[in-house]
Length: 238
Image (cartoon, rainbow, N blue to C red; front, side):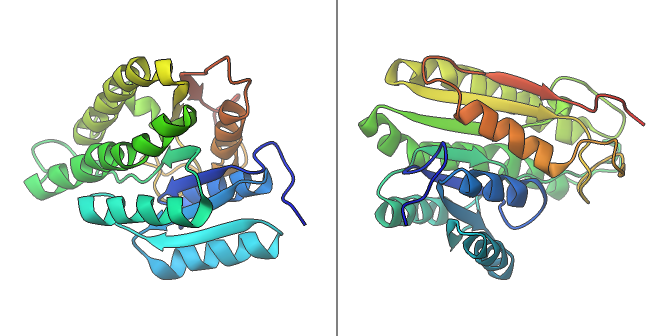
């Protein structure tokens, strides 16, 4: 039976797809009919997510890749294109955060955030752009953070990467929109995952599925329009 949904016939890559927001995004895109490629470093996690998606009737392929390693990302993109036949959506979701004062942060911690949060986005984007440019369509979705618009104590290193991501995405959008490629950046506040810097949880805080809904909303909009930035925060914060 052919897949049904607003993304039927399309292929999506989600980085950091083994847990949290990435896992929710992978499920949501697959539920809309996309063949979803799950990329992450931990094979067991993405194989478990892929299995759950298939059990639900979706189509998913796990591909192990570290977003900070150029050759791994290049191979992942090439394998994804070979398996699915197209790369219509890239979700740059993989990210890490170390939350401590600058005086206490190590150089290794600072460099690690830049490697994943910015270098990883650059490498994955660069890897998929040739296929999108050839087809004359596509959507690149970046999962940023409201930390990319607002500073807070203990967030200097993390905020810096997300402010940089906003600049990168804005410039990229201007470069590729003429090829009918949309660049969308989503800025969640605290989300109920183990990643949350504030350690918030509970039903009133933004959930991973809410971020996934924003991704689906943005990539299923009429192709003539682009939601280049979406802020996502709780309606009624605790």
